[in-house]
Amino acid sequence: MGTQESNEHGGGTGRRALLGAAVLGAGGAALGLSGTARAAGAGRGNGGGVRSLPVPTIVGHRGASGNRPEHTLGSYQLALDMGADIVEAGDLVPTKDGHLVCRHEPEIGGTTDVADHPEFAGRRTTKVLDGVSTTGWFTEDFTLAELKTLRATERIPANRPHNTLYDGRWEIPTFEEVLRWQDEQTRRTGKQVWIYPELKHPTYFRGLGLPTEERLAKLLRRYGKDKKNSPVIVQSFEPTSIQRMNKLVGNPLAVLLSGAGSRPWDFVATGDPRTTDDLITPEGLKEIASYAQGIGPTLDLIIPRDSAGRLTAPTTLVRDAHRAGLILHPYTMRNENPFLPADFRKGTDADAYGDAFGAFQAYFATGIDGVFTDNPDTGLLAREDFLDS
Image (cartoon, rainbow, N blue to C red; front, side, top):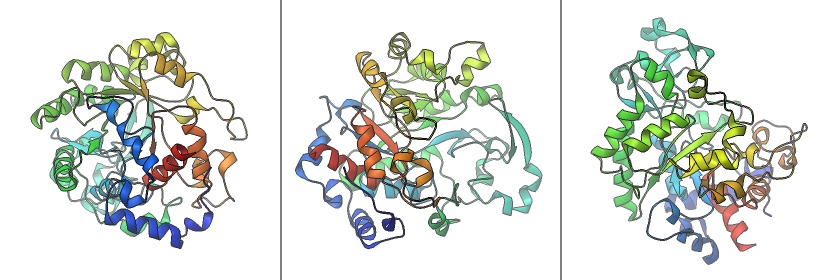
């Protein structure tokens, strides 16, 4: 198993060389992947579509958010240039005038410079978002033109102080801009670019008269990306939202799954008593497979952690999901110590890298089909190690 030394986080020679190579050219050649690792590009299926993707698939989580402020065109571009198989381009939330924009949450105080705009001071408010009282500024209270005056900032500066260098550089992208970027980069690279948008809080927005599924479906149809083999996988934490999308488009779909014992908010809103535990039973997975092609479970549903944060024995989720015909793209691998299982941490610095390569190997060994990661460069090299071992 590979080991990522902590001095690489500080911008050591090896890491700088890797990033320099990645920027010079996308894909396996830029990262120096071996023939065996590049052979993963054949995937596990034929005929195109999601099953033709490399396995394990490396998904750039909100782009390359370990290196750039998340959900910006700069973050998406870096993930692509690093060689990510899919770019999670778009946690989708609506504006007041109905446009879909890319933000991790509708509350944007933590990811933009909105607090520095006195003209928007009066927009700060408190709302109940999926049962949680949340104070800040919300996309649904702004027109697109107003949001375009803001600039993105790093969401977790305590863990990623290096990313604050890029605060203010990029604006909030619309999903339509992402679709155009996808087409432009596909033409530029000569390789189909895949994206993985997420519908955020669809029940909440439907209650505000801003339903997001129909808006997303309309855009996908407009750009000819609403088919079974289209390079756009749609995901949501709300199963009923994915069921709705299944009736609107032909795209591959995935149900995201939070921690054990949690309940999707649409279940709470409709009185459905089921929890994540029910959804990951063989019966629950079979039901999901009737309207979706995959699941995105938290990594702890694949390998739980004990009270000390160390990995325990894997669950049967990978086996059970595969038996139901589902692919698994769990989330989220991050290189920094606080986000890694205790087995793979090095020291106590909140922004220092631990043994991320070792953690990748532990998860890959369970048979997962891919993983979301904030650090696509690390994920790609970890895949090479795994496939060559």
